[in-house]
Image: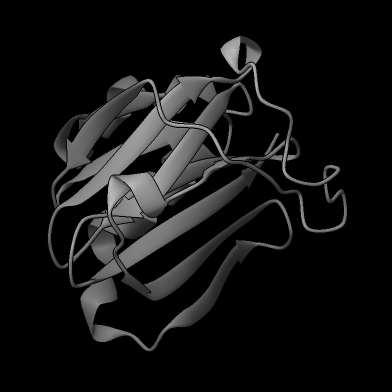
Length: 149
């Protein structure tokens, strides 16, 4: 997982061919003012889900993993804490078999560490990063980009 400032996103653009397009879009558009839903930038290869998430306590949030997409999380209206655990170090089994159609599995295991992400920052979450997003209290407007590997 990479935690960085959107102001310095050019340092991370070389990590995936679609990252520059994503970061440029985020810098040029105010996603706090758009309706929730999907924004398609490059078909199924790059899209953004804008959501109003209800934050939960750390002990109530499960770890999730994806295989086909890199997640890039951008909190927009306030801080969000995201738990992290190296997938290869998880000793628990997934709660259910991996859902290939929805690119998703969850684990009922605690995160190994937590990072608080502020508006103007982002986290890049790779398939080897089990992550527990939306930790905190209240609600949060956020953007979750999905970047096909």
